[in-house]
Image: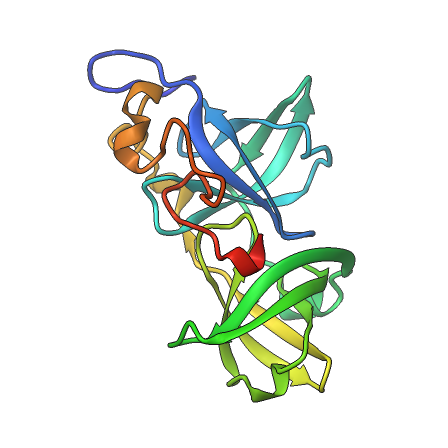
Amino acid sequence: MSETVKDGREITGQPVLVLDFDTLACEETTASKFNKSGCEIRSGKLTEVGQLVGIRLADMEQMIKGRVEKVEDGSVYVSFKVEDKSKVEKRREPRKSVSIPAWVSGHKSDDGVRCDIVDASKSGCRLSSTGLEALPENIKLQIAGLDMPVKGEIVWRNSSFAGVKLTWQFANGGDITETRIKPPDLAGKAGVKDKPKSNSSGFGVKRRKEAD
């Protein structure tokens, strides 16, 4: 059942940013049929049932964690009911080879180095760059395509690579109500621009040139 705003209009095409936790790839698309259990996303990239994703609305500081339940003709049905995995399961998470530009810096500073994420999993990644040895243990990672920094902890490093444990911050999908979801004609008030600039994520946050 689709959500409605107070004047009775049905909500369709809500702008969202979707993050695939397996590959750290981002996609700007639209979502609809929000309720406390989940939503429907338009996507040609999400194809695997059981895939874990993060959904960010333009007016929210955190992402909602979800799991793909069904894929059908470009529509992806996502459930917000995701069980936490044990530490043992996290250690066994398969890592996927990727090539994603990013900017890594100290937790309380924007001064850092450009790097490439060369493999990723749901809870961590490996960075490739020079200058990683000079970074503090607690870092923040600005990933190309994602308009919010991700906190992390460097668990090992050498002169060329660093292993990072990522600390994701999630909002509760059950807290999505008609007062948090805006119809398309009000989306601009949430920070979404009709014609974003080339260096903009589309969510009102400029990307670093180093990470483009």
